[in-house]
Image 1 (cartoon, one colour):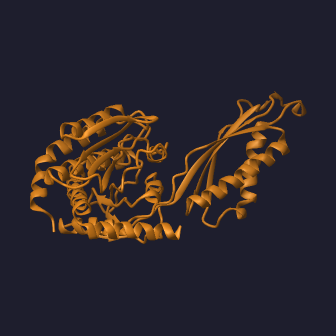
Image 2 (image 1 turned 30 degrees about the vertical axis):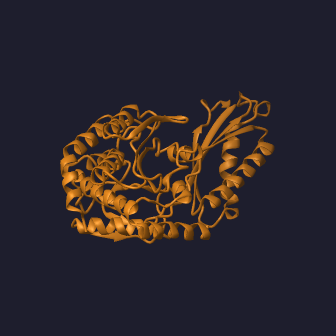
Image 3 (image 1 turned 180 degrees about the vertical axis):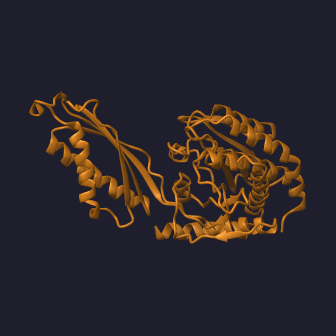
Length: 391
């Protein structure tokens, strides 16, 4: 059941919650440029008595805000995203993700002025393209965290949705420019790019079964009477697991090496971080969904094995119990697609903030249970251990 005292606290915070979400929406900042959003969110937590550190390791727009209770453990962390997309602004609703994480932590610590353990908000920039959570994980800023919580806006309330692994590669070929009347005097970098596409298509059966790739040519020359001395291409590689993506990337490296021998062009491969597959912790997601149901929402359950989309929360879910459910911000039967201007407008509507309010109550309620209910917390940790044994 929903704690009436918690509902009253969230009611008191609602006006500031909406103001914060709209301010972030109105000032969209792309990955690693989220200075104003980071300052705004961390400032609220500092006012509430959290110990705040802004700028974590190599990420100047990341932050970690912690309030300590009677013990060091358990340590739960709400994860805040606040990066926007180029051209479409907050077309993925991160104005709501970051706002929700901050106000869930505020509501929880107001509800439980004395609690055991620690409550943190970790500001994780650049989810869309640079994997801020992965960098923070690798640089040690999750080392003392036991459990990670976040929720994402959507057209429906949904729990149990997993995610696929993904990475991207940029391949740059250096050849030798020449007049097209004397092609033997040059080394055609565009031919190297074309052969890379052909090689991937021809060797696709070498990749794990669920892997798929998609590529584009970034640069392929400037005039049709010049043999291109430079050309480049970019590929995304998706798979069921991080291991599958790593296998496919290794195969692409072999193909590029063969193309170098075939064409004489020299290649440079830029590999981005791998977003790992996501394993939803169903103990937490079902409890979160139950709280949304208590608030009058209809909640659907996805097949955890049926993974869709990719996010850097996947890497966190491999390191600790983590959740990434979805909360509804619309009643439309035909909602707009994500990563569009229209989706962003949906996530800044009055209806969206009504959904955000329920999400904050559900998140804070779950956080309370994780701090106060040793048996529930043990079941969460046991499920995570079971997932790790299967990987």
